[in-house]
Image (cartoon, rainbow, N blue to C red):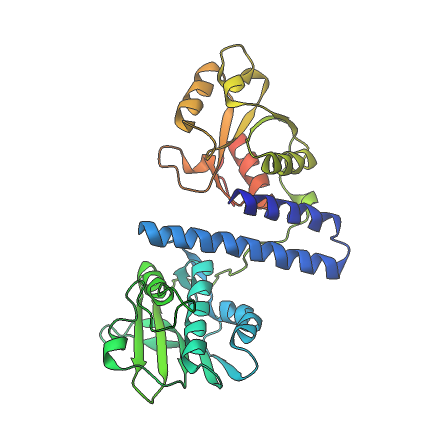
Length: 344
């Protein structure tokens, strides 16, 4: 996450310098958004391993499929026909956009490998009703015209590490993560397959209450309109590249930034009183909570923790998850200084 933070941060800064060059800016934004999706995938894998809940928001599956279509075409190759059938454009579900993307990509890769050559894959998004409750739900399905599955394989495909692929072609985690994602989003996964009849795997998710989902991985907002300030900030980050990128970003936003060790900040010699905010890499700190308490005793300096995990002992308003965007850092710093929520 530190590596991705440096990558994302520098791409944001470079994008600002080249905002007037439409072609270069578009390429930089694509690279930045890909890095952010990489971080979401890392978080997704960690959540899966720990059994944690997903970080949900309202998302339009139709928009996700349209955005993924160029990538999916490259994944399946020229010998496989990829079809997209979306009839529920405006509908939203409560789910993680990155995890939904990952689930769709996993299903398409499995369909591609099942065909093993030439054939057809269809990705569809449509509305349906639950048979038992008559409640509306959204169905995201991937269908292939491959050989289909025998009953014994069909019963086990969602088991972690179960795979029928040859060595080196799969881990057996793809479909189990699809099921975990669906269940985390209050949905289910259904499979329709038989030898000689192809395979259709469907994710069924309940519709969200509103239709205002935003599937954008990150917004592109000009630096000139971001929250800024002139307060003094102590930067406690051990990683040299991440510290340099964060310091440059905060300096561009107008803040007076100085690198500082946690030992220097915590000692009772008045050092901390010269700062308004301490930005701390929580993954470097041996005891972040003790440091926060020490700073509170010796001064009124506020703390913003940069972290790759959720810190239960620290208020959510004082945490900014890595890798953070320029927008997230600007909002986070200003939010803590003004006593408001961090928004990334």
